[in-house]
Image 1: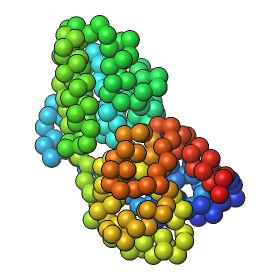
Image 2: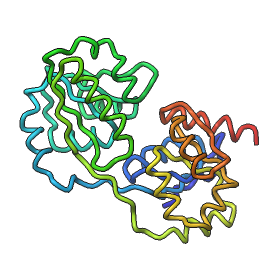
Image 3: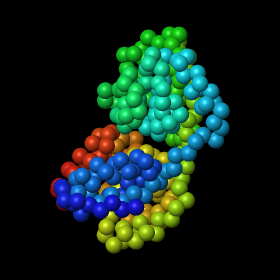
Length: 263
């Protein structure tokens, strides 16, 4: 889906957004304000967990916990869709600003977030995470998602500090089965100037979806990513034109503005 551009500093710049549909639409609106031409090409589908029973049980017991950790905006949206009445004594912890925005938009005001490092290590560095003996945590995460090593490190570290941690899978990430011929045709016609990728798994899915033809086009198209880990993964996959931005939507937009102001 393409949203037509308006006047602005990114007027005429076609940007492929590879996020799941819901998050892609939000970013597309912000991009359009700057005049950009969003091309929504989701490389990930968010689905319920294969086994819903542990998730449903954790939601029923939510008031038993002191903290709830959310590893992504998808985790926040999955929980809020099923449990809009948040227990006021349960402190929500967001790994990054996108996740925090989702929680706050859902009506949760008691949210902690790392000040700068938006990952598992950043969460573990929070002052509130240092003395957690006998505290109870529920860790909402995706099923079969990349980054499990970091999530396990977070769980193990909190348990080493004396906490109880219950990991709960609240969604699945799936690769879409839609075709990409229309996207490739637009790309060949010069209507694609940039691609935004927000996770290593999305990047892998996107590469699989566009095939060798798309990979060749990616080599000459700047790929904007919000974390050095994703940039390193892109480099390992052979991409050479990668731009690392700050880990927020605003950071991605600022990166696009800076890049295209020079071209």
